Every structure is written in structure tokens, then in C-alpha cells.
Image (cartoon, rainbow over all chains, first blue to last red; front, side):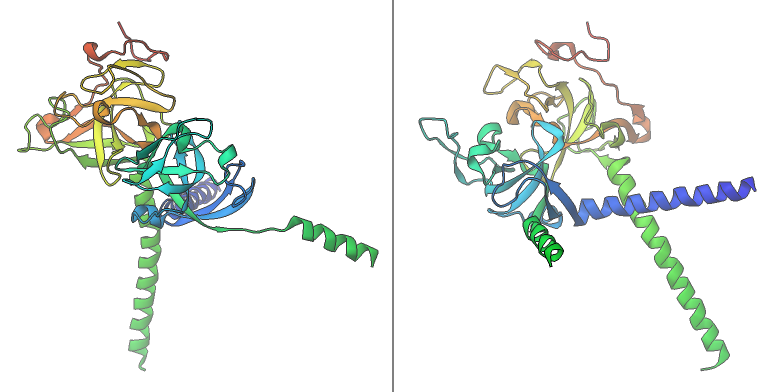
Length: 162
Length: 185
């Protein structure tokens, strides 16, 4: 009986390892579903929105201006940021912060990108921590789940009254 | 269709199914191991002489890269690490960690004489100063670019050794915020 239990445990461990590895390969090389938090990409992406990210573009260096990307935060490698690519290497970018009096322009250095959130008033991005190395980019967002919560409540109320 | 042919077709299908099953197990497991646990790499260039590649282009060292050790982005001063090059994301570079976040380093050839390493960044240098494209050229690098910790030289056999995390005394940071786990003078 002990051998039967041992056999079953080993098989369970084996399947777990196998599926964990398949999951790693899928998230690393293909893409996955991510939940974004924070107000820095409003109105494009709201707080707690669910989006789909694909990782093929970054492996084939196909990230373009205007793409929304997920990247590792330059100041905290364990957290991710979600911003729009405003400039690629070599582009001339307006680098001054909204609070600065004098506007300053700069070129994005090689191997880096310039990221900005859509909600410029409330976004900590390249205007604060500078250009972000391309190697920190994890994936490109291409799809957002749109979920209209208000519509759902109204329909339920109407159903109860009728 | 004769009975013999039907039997051999059954054998082919079974073999094909077994092959697919093995393939879809082996490939993800191997890829995950090489990405997350450890892999090997050949070192090119002279930027880490004499620790790595002392013979120049005649014989390139092959090192063991340990991803598992840096899964939480924990490195110590003196570690030899591989990272994604900040100037060219297609390339990996291998350098020694000189300073951690909060340290103030005295630079060699950087535009500023003293640099304070920002939060989430490290300062890396090659052992062969002057022949190394490192933080003295591109500044502090973000920990997110960290790829692996080089722990051993595997080839050539006469150079089998464990790579020690040694910080040359002349490269100690001028001021450090974090205490190093290794003894420091």
C-alpha cells in the first residue's frame, strides 16, 4: 500500500512540474493575462482592468511607438509598470516635467525607450526616472476586457420589478 | 487492408503518440530549467581579465550561470554576474558587482567623479579597467536587467574553479548604506 501511495505522490509531483514548466514557457514566450492597477494609464486602462499581454514582440524587437508595454520597474525589479512607448532609441523627446519652467529636449539613448502614462497629470514615468532600458520590457498589451458593471446592475433591477 | 498492415499502422500511431508526449514534457521542462535554474555560457572578450579569459582569444572560458541564486534579485558586492546590456538588449555582458543601491562609488572615467547608486540599481565593472564597457560608461544598471550569477568556470578543465565574490580593496565604495554579508575591512 505504501508503494501505491508513493507512486501516486511521485506522479502528482511529476504532473505539477510538467504543468508549471508549460506555464512558464507560455508566460515567458507567448503571453498571458494581467491585471493592471493604478491611475497612470487612464482613460485607456482603468484601475483593476484586465488586459492581455503578448511577449512575441519583445523577443523579435517589434515594439513600436504608441504601443502600451508592461516593463519591470527600473527602481524596483519585483514590480511591473504599464506605460505607453513614446519614443524609441534616437528619437528626440520632450523630457521636462510638467512642473519645470523651461522645456528641455533630449535624445533617447541607444538600447532604451521613453515611457509615459496616458494620464500625464498622475503618472510616474520616464519624465521622472529617465529612459528605460529595452531589456526591462516584458510584453506588449494588445487587448482589454471591457466589462460594463453599470449595465449589469440596471438589468437585474428591471428584472426584479417585472 | 491485411491484418499485418493494420498491426503495423497501430504500432506507428502508438510510437508517434509516445514521441509527442515525451516531446511536450521534455521541451518545456528543459527550457524552464535553462531559464530559471542554470545554464552555461562562453565568455568572450577581455573585460574580466585576469579572472575570466586570461588567455585572450586563444581559449574562451565557459562558465556556469546560476539563475536560481538571483531569482529575488539578491546580489552581493564582489559577485560576478551576467546581465542584459543596457546599450544592446540582444547581448549579455558579464561583470563584477562593485556597489549596491545607496552606495557612493568613486568612478574611473565616468563623467561624474562620485556617483550615488539609485534605488533598485547596481554598479558593475569589469576587472580589466580601461578595456571594459561597464558602469563607468553607461552608469548604474537596473536590477531588472540581472540575468544570472556566474559561480564556476567549467571549461577548460585546467581552469575548473569556483568564482569567488571578491571585491578588490581599491574598489570599495566610499560610503555604503547596506551592510555586506561578507566580512569587509
